[in-house]
Every structure is written in structure tokens, then in C-alpha cells.
Image (cartoon, rainbow, N blue to C red):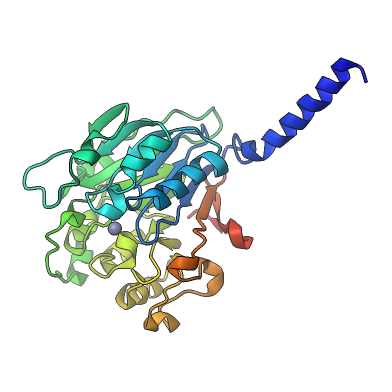
Length: 349
Ligand SMILES: [Zn+2]
């Protein structure tokens, strides 16, 4: 066979081998992955420009950082983390950062830095892991994402609150929400760093996604009362893995999400009170769980199996992720559990 034809055949074969990695890229969608970090948090946003934003890094050790690196490189086909946001200094959120920084380059880190009266300190290894730039984030800051080509909305990722301070209501044209306050009952104050969580709002055209980290009940009230600083959203990451020290019902009734996604563990989250409040929120059409709740109360405090990514005990867990994909005009989105061939479509509100 002539050498040119042979090398063309080889070249074509190599190209087609590369294709699966490219699939999903450059399709104009904005994707969000809930990576299974066993009851911690690791939410990956991939913009239509293939920029990556990772919110939280799971637990220390190889397991969680390995799963995160695999989704970024093998599933999303990317080589680095452009922006890492660490919502607060608990191990299930910052713990994977140091190891992850040895697996993939991290360009920018956004966190609360070192601040007065820090209730929890992640320590030297966290503050010294490899990253090109570190930024202390403040309410009103926007993560610098590139504009998308004309004809498509550009994603916007805004910090609404952090370290118990909140964005100026005028900056987000926040609606007066004073009546909601009458439904609020204070809970015992959470003195840990949860209350200092960074709260992010992502929008892509009309589509809105809320990630409040582990922000706790009394601070949640301040997000929606006396002004609703968030507005209404499409997708709500169930705050604090579905624990009932968070997920204040006045947040749910103000944000009016259509889809709720809970990054719970096998025995963490899925709190009966949170379930009751989610189910009582009339705007919610679907609740997804990263794990099946295997506690004795799991008979009632679980969604149907085909809304759950992982069903087995920790030692048999396969670490499946949930994937959200927003259409290029932002008007509809799918939620998928690719490992189980499950995919459903929803209209943006
Ligand atoms: Zn947590």
C-alpha cells in the first residue's frame, strides 16, 4: 500500500479515537456535574467556552480528588481547573484541594482567605497548595468568565454572600420579600465555618443555578429577607448535603426551584425535615440524590431509585455523577445519570 494512503488510514483512526473525548465539547451547552465525593461537595461547571469552575473539592485523600480529576479530564475533556471556589473550611469541601493540585493545574482559587475569628482553620497545607493565583472573594464579586460568541448568552457566576456578609440589594435589583420573614423561626446558631459559606448564583441566559455551600439556617434567612437577593432559580443544590441545620423553608419558597439536587452521602443528609420541606415546595418537579440514603429511615426519606446516582454501600460505591446540561439558549436543560442511562428534560422558568 502506498505510504501516503497508509498514513492517512492511521491518521483517520487516531482522529476517530480522539472523538469520544471531544464529544459534548463545543456544543454550546453549559454543563454542571455533581461528582460523587461521598457526602462532601464537588460541583463542576463547564462553560460553552470550555472554561472550568470547580466549587469545592471533596474530602482529603486520593479517592475524591481522583474522581474529580477523572470527570474533568476524561468526561469533560479538559486539562486544568480555571477557577476553584472553596466555599468554607470544612474537610469535605477543601480537603481534596491539595492532592487535586498535584493532578491538574489550578489557575485561580477563590476563598475566604484568613479572616478575623475564623472558627475553623484548614491549615498550612491548604493555604500553600499549588495554584497560579489566590483571591479573597467578597459579595458582589463575579468570576471572570469569557463571553460566548454572539447569539448565545454568556454565563455569569456571581458571589451573593460570604463570611456572613451579603450583596447590596440594589446591585441585584432584589425584590422586597418582607412577608417571608413572618415564616422564619430561628434555629440554634451554628458556630462553625458553615455559616461563613460562599454563596454563588450561576446564570446562563434565563437559566439560574444556586449553590449555597453549607450556609446555615439563620444566615439563609438573610439571603431572602427582607430582600430576596437570589431571585427565583431553576436548579437548587440542596444546601449542606440535605442536613436540617440548613435548607430554611423560606429559602425554598422564595427561590422556587424546579429541580433540587442533593449531594448527600450514604448516611449523611436526606434529613426527614429537609425532605418534608422539599416535598412541600410546590415549584419542585424533581429531586435527585447523589446517594441512596441507607439509614433505617431510608424507606421514606429517599426519592425513587431512578433519581439516584449511587445505590450501594460505601465499599461497593461506584462513584457515579449527576450531569446537568443547559441548552445553548438557556431555555431548557437536561438532568442525566449517565451510568444508568437516565435523562430527563426540563424547561427553564
Ligand atoms: Zn459539607
